[in-house]
Length: 101
Image (cartoon, rainbow, N blue to C red; front, side):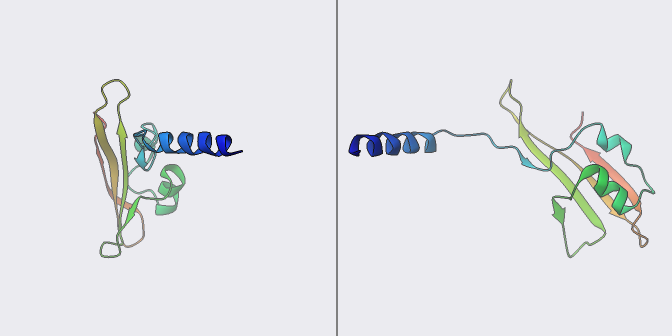
């Protein structure tokens, strides 16, 4: 029994040492960013894109969808996203896409 516990502890400790590159933020489908257009309602945009990563109470009419990920081939970290600014009727007034080159 002690041998089993020792083996399990070693296994758990060794997995804690492995550095995982974690995908953070929204998972943005590059096709979805071109489906949403100015004039779309907030509901329609959230149906397509999901819940925004950033909803700032200081800027309630702004929604940010941000994705950070590592390229598997190069190991480089990339950030890309979509910023949506809504008007008073909660329709998209402007949409800015970045990092999708």
